[in-house]
Length: 568
Image (cartoon, rainbow, N blue to C red; front, side, top):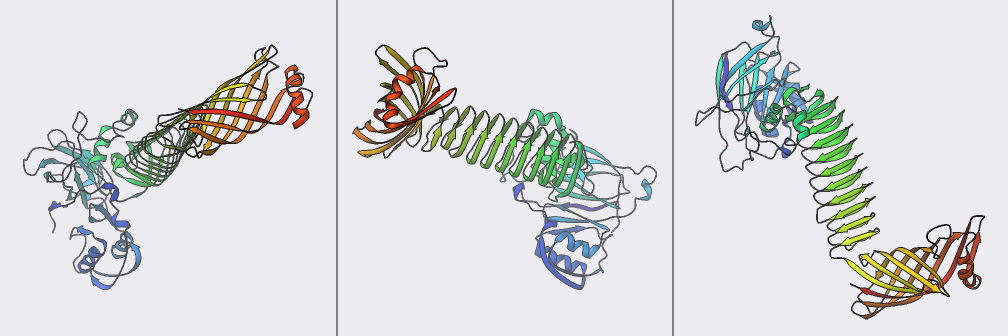
């Protein structure tokens, strides 16, 4: 059937499915065989096996064509190539596979090579014009948008006698329109609205075009023209493209439809925009993906992903993911993930997870996790999580924790706090404030000694653990470091002391504990130190060990300690 416009409309009754669940029909692997079988019969069998419908012009596929095929676990694309040869193209729309034939350029276009197709897009019921509808040539990705009156004009260089245009708009069923390449007639296209029983996506921006979280970012708006953002939300192209090369999002091999395409390999010299990546993506300034990245993503400056990242993601400046992160994420400055992390975040400045972290966050400055579960956080300055298992940093903050916070300051809303009064053979009075969990808490404190007018005092920091605190008799472990001044300030006479104690805890009343037991002490001071010679000498001679160099002396001895602890 040869007419200027073929097949009134092939309205593809597409159900609105989750785009992330769609699989490219051409990549589906099946087994099928045929020997001199009519093409129509063969395509019906292939349709049943692949759950796909086939659309083609009878002008390019003769009814009496016989095919012979033998395929075992081969993709539908390869099976179709066996049937039709390399002179044909295959494209998917929803659950349809469109068969197109490659031919020479039409005679009517030999002078300029350009043909312009124009028309209008209307609502099939109200007959009102539909603005911002995406129209694109399925074979070579040339696209256009309708204006406020529903009109469009697409200028392309045809490479087939038949051109398949796909019309897509959020809230409407996709429509496929096949025209003769020689035709320049105006034609109207009517789109059917999806019933209201199917959930609609919210409209947000002033032009009435729905944009995602990535589309609303200022940096994305700077790089990606609005026409591409509209196209990416109107249309998803199920076929994965082997490769994309782009200078900027609008200047690439996928043209202005790049936001609707998943690429296996993508190189973005300055910046690129894709629906997703299933392989490798490398970018000079920015890699921007509307949905998922599966594989390796490297950005010299930034990576912005609107879906999940499964694999390895690295950026010179920042990574921002709106979905989940499964794998390894590294940046020199900042990482932000809006959903769950299963893996490792590593950054020079900060890591932020707006949901759970099943893994580890490592940063030179800060880590923040807002979910109910957090694995480990290692930060140079600050860690925050609701329920962490392990925190290491100068300041650790949590709502609830039964894990192991290690820091100078541990602030846990429903945590462990205590005040301890300690005395031993060297420092007669030490007051310690403990904070963290019963399993692991830190101490900050002050100590003092006064004998025969000789006064000394010091600052204390330590780590402790209280085992079996609910029993009458438990155990406590404490490692305490003290910087002691013999009364002259912190100068060459300053002494460093480390004390390790493991002793039983006797529970006197509900929150009061008394402990007494042995300690191991290590002293480090300048070689000439009157305080050490006077105070430590006797202890070392009876129950210790000492060593010295020209500038430093070391002392080790065994002592005793008593401690009263009040748990707040």
